Length: 234
Image (tube, rainbow, N blue to C red; front, side, top):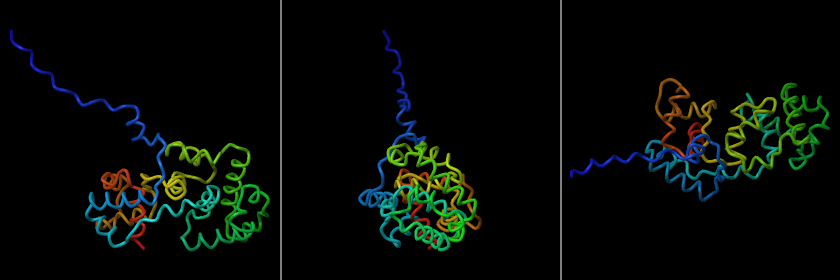
């Protein structure tokens, strides 16, 4: 009696966890100093071109930004929209001084601040309305900042973009620099666009699709790769 031919094994189907991970639906541990060092080694091994830049630029210190309070980080992100780094820092520092210091930059103090003085500090009326909406949502519990620490990337983006003035870019900045999530790649950021263009030696600016394709080799540490792309421009 002849044996029936052996059946080929099919690769296992993706589990819900794997699918969720790919969609950014699972909470992720923040980048630590040790994890940044590991990411640095992984990126240098996987991508010799980026690796050469990493070797020249030194250690990644993105984890240092985690010291800021979430409300302070979000207020800073709103202030920074459509401004150069220097101009944004100047205006943000004026706002901080107006409320009596960084430790006093709270929703209650923002709502109590004279709006004309906020305008005199350099905030546009539109940004003032955005910061007040953020403050109101935190004050009345519609946005619970402490809960964002444990939420998946996709849920954090959904929660933040519900606030007036916050788009995906602002949410991605919060994920990277306050929550220190390891695998964020903001293709809409001009610095990342120019950094990718310079790294790849391209004559024209790359499309988001080209950037995402190039960044595939940098998973699951695209935040660290992005940090180096900014430094390449500096």
